[in-house]
Length: 254
Image (tube, rainbow, N blue to C red; front, side):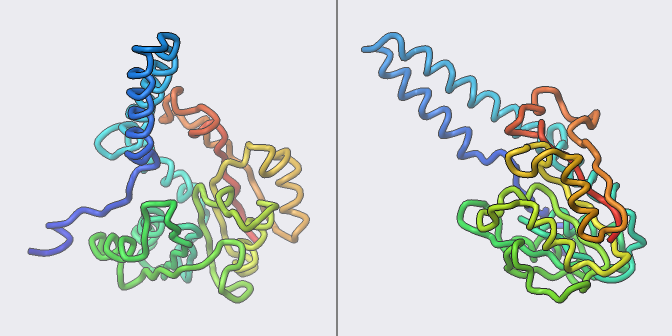
């Protein structure tokens, strides 16, 4: 049977099941202790509420639920003003969802996905390659292990670059703005970019207007900030700061 018919891609969920299990387990521990120390029942209730919230969020992110995760990826591509001819880079590709979406949207493009694929995440290069094969784009898509703060490519190597929820996670970059700068380095002059991250967290990026001006000072021709946390498909319950409440998108032309 054809793999594209028999198998489904595995893109994961931004709320891992372990977060639900852990919250529920701690809730049951406190519930048991509440038989002796009654006041711990309050903590048990709080952890059960956390578990319930994560169950809700996981459902909303999934394709069988609210499809929020898929639509957030789509925001990145909707703000990439690129003709689709040449080479493109997806920085921090995870299981390859955005990489594959980019390749499917631009059938003439060659797309590279890079990620560090650490043990902290349920992602891998092999899953990326399997997903690309299932989606029918493996001939135009390749994956490589690399750090977002030290991309193994020459200056101006790519015609376009994208990234989603990655820059703030790069632990070996004290100044997260340098991750943006490194991403822009490998885009050619006139190339396009669309980066989505928690740009509204000042501890990471400072004031958003200052960030835009800083990027322009690097010689970038066009920079625009889009406050994607206000997208109408994002439920209010998911706009908490640790979910989607701090997301925004920086796009433009080098």
